[in-house]
Amino acid sequence: MSALNLSWYSKSLDSQVALRCGSYPSCSHQTNALAFRGSESMGHSLKFAFGNSSAKTRLRNHIRPPLRVVCVDYPRPDLDNTMNFLEAALLSSSFHSSPRPAKPLKVVIAGAGLAGLSTAKYLADAGHKPILLEARDVLGGKVAAWKDDDGDWYETGLHIFFGAYPNVQNLFGELGINDRLQWKEHSMIFAMPNKPGEFSRFDFPEFLPAPLNGILAILKNNEMLTWPEKVKFAIGLLPAIVGGQAYVEAQDGLSVQEWMRKQGVPDRVTTEVFIAMSKALNFINPDELSMQCILIALNRFLQEKHGSKMAFLDGNPPERLCMPIVDHIQSRGGEVKLNSRIKKIELNDDGTVKSFLLNTGDVIEGDVYVFATPVDTLKLLLPENWKEIPYFKKLEKLVGVPVINVHIWFDRKLKNTNDHLLFSRSPLLSVYADMSLTCKEYYDPNKSMLELVFAPAEEWISRSDSEIIDATMGELAKLFPNEISADQSKAKIVKYHVVKTPRSVYKTVPDCEPCRPLQRSPIEGFYLAGDYTKQKYLASMEGAVLSGKLCAQAIVQDYEFLVARGQGRLTEATIT
Image (cartoon, rainbow, N blue to C red; front, side):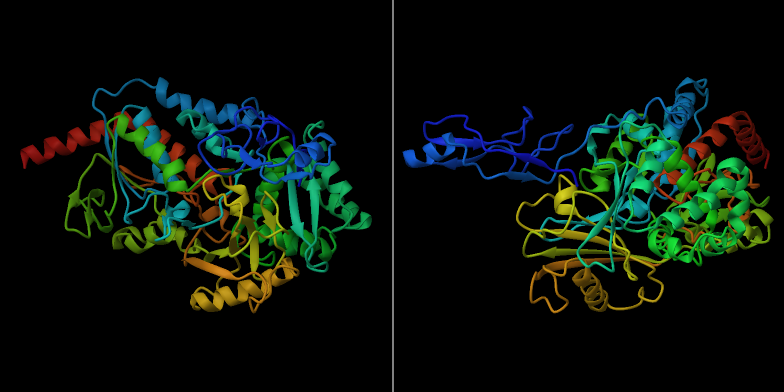
């Protein structure tokens, strides 16, 4: 990590010396932590009293202990001029510029995750009236979070916002909340299992454009891959570079491990790098993950200068990201209802949707219906006479992958960590971060809170929280050999939370791509949104947001047909 080594300085030699957060003039006097650059300040001056002249003399003589600042945010990268961002912005603007509907559609949307929120937001921008129904009492779906009795937050997952997420970045800009992303140093940091407590880095130089910055980052790292391995991997990637998107899509039938061996890439490349990447992207190992998933990620990360640059949200996702979307929807006449679980999709005689029946017994009717839930939830609620339609039948292949998110609060500040996402390269853990450093709302100068993704989790999802914590501590003892031991004889656990998601993002195994549905279904007036639906990004936050935009676009495009269909039904009902 790049840290600033700052010196003590004297603001006043009268009675006290103020230690400030670097040279940033925006240090607040409101809170009690170090300040973050490029965002709202986190802290006020820390003051140290000097009661005698000898202390002042020592200060004048420059006997000054260094200060290591470990939580410095980086400026927002220049993303707005990339082709993908401009494409995302153009799609967003189409909703504002589309003709205002003479009769706004009432669109009932199931699921207030990012896909449902995105669908509702852009429909509201186009002048329609979305009604968003969420089964639980919390917003966010797979980015949901909860506050415990101590006022601390725990989350469904460890969420990272990449520069290569143009629709997400565009959404933050539209909502005026760009400053809520805390950008980190442009690096990827991997733990070294064979050297407990040590890390290996891929540092992307700012002075080079893509893909040269990524190539140099790989070439400079000699700890994880040897030169012969790098050369063989580069040769193996040549067909993807030459063949472009058509080649990438054609690799869906191969697992990462199969593709690597077919291309003559040594197995050590897979074990050293791509086990960690596979688990981070889809929570499964390279022998299961489709190579298409890896190639899409590499394409985004290597083709855009800031594509692999990472940011953390500055607090809990429901309040810091989801609520601004809800406020936007409601300001345009839309509605968002929590605790509204759908019990049944009720149909008309012709097989189209009549209404959503809720567990409460309430019946919600609309002009258009959208399912923006995980694919597993949709499959549970599919009407029987829809299940043999090829569009829906192909969904059988798409199954959510289990994942576990672990939060552990320790009684001390851990030293062997970074203000960044870390790839653990552990057989049980995927990625982790010390959220007491990386996230403004969770910042604590005295104690660490590690948030860790436990994956693959299929064999662990049914085990007790205490078993999962014991296994996690065993792995952490290898990452922090001088600070953590499995028996807690070193750093002690103050508390923990374990969040299990039995069905998270769809499991991206080979041959899944043809099963992903378009947002417009063959059922008139019924649409889908979700990162499992057809869109060019991965099963991710970016994929969810883009799927919502594409769903809203399909509805706007179908407006005349949907209005005519509604009028026809009204006429039919009147005659009857």
